[in-house]
Image (cartoon, rainbow, N blue to C red; front, side, top):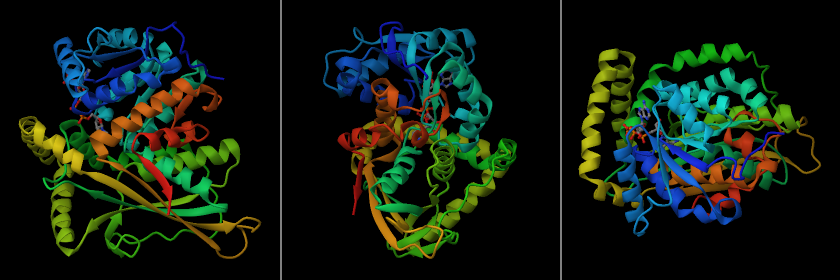
Length: 427
Ligand SMILES: NC(=O)c1ccc[n+]([C@@H]2O[C@H](COP(=O)([O-])OP(=O)(O)OC[C@H]3O[C@@H](n4cnc5c(N)ncnc54)[C@H](OP(=O)(O)O)[C@@H]3O)[C@@H](O)[C@H]2O)c1
């Protein structure tokens, strides 16, 4: 059994690496809000990054956001840089869990995972890049198992709501759930959505490198997952969904990859019935389709060529400036945003044999919450970390590289999320 040290043997339960980033700042505020949920009602924590001055400002801003006089006396600062392995090792030796907010992960992630594995720290990230997530599974699973370390990827909006939503729906279904589709709708405030530099770059390079993922997947040499019950039909690339009453496209993020890895783990480890899964996202009416097709074609064209990627990244600098000039606006924008995953599942009622006939029973569930990237993501990441600290005996027996669903299937993570504004319900 892997051991989660929550005693005083390491100075910090949590170290937030990349705390000076746009998302990192919100993660710091979320940790500061939840210190009483740490082991024995206490949480020892530190912020880490490559600039001490920036980290001091982060703590000042977090204290302001929480209406506290200051945080500096209770929170330490660790200077660490991805380019300096010794600094990463020193950081990891002091942490029970590293909350890694330094992205794009394809560029900066692996040295941090390696340092965590080598120095016995658990690692949580908010990566939404399947190539990185699956690559870490390929490269570090057995080392992490040997060291008793949990490396748990995609613990933000990508992909906790979808992955835990599938498990929630399965657990609420009376019988054997065999297929599930999710339909994501995002409502933004009157000023529109908000995406930041690192998040933007992750998306650009994720699309550009999607072909490399196929060759990585071949290396795993997995047997196909058995299809239980009627085969789930894949929908088209653009269709009108009666479920959410709007035009809909397949969801392009990491959710399908993460859910499939979870289902594989649960089937192989606990002989649970794998659930087939299709992920879709609503885009609105005809006007939105025209805008999206234009933007999609431009984006697809630009990410294929290095000059295009550079252009998109230069554009992100303006976005960056815009966001910092409009922090007030952006925070209000976030307050007005929300997401909703509607799950539509089908399966076989209790006592029925899923290998005979068509599914006889249906279920609808919802997972909903606040703005995805910078409100829901810090909540999900911090609750994942608190679950490791408080429920170590409910984690998989061995350390390893896990999806959220694989790591947290037997824990109370969903209840914790419900208490923090990410709500799971049957409708
Ligand atoms: N799962 C989700 O739904 C979700 C939501 C939001 C964000 N994200 C992901 O989170 C990541 C961060 O996004 P962001 O928008 O917050 O990015 P960001 O504002 O650009 O922040 C990047 C952070 O990385 C740090 N960093 C860069 N190079 C470093 C190095 N060599 N050593 C140490 N630290 C280094 C930066 O430090 P400095 O301040 O010193 O430059 C900064 O703290 C992205 O991968 C994004 O996709 C995921």
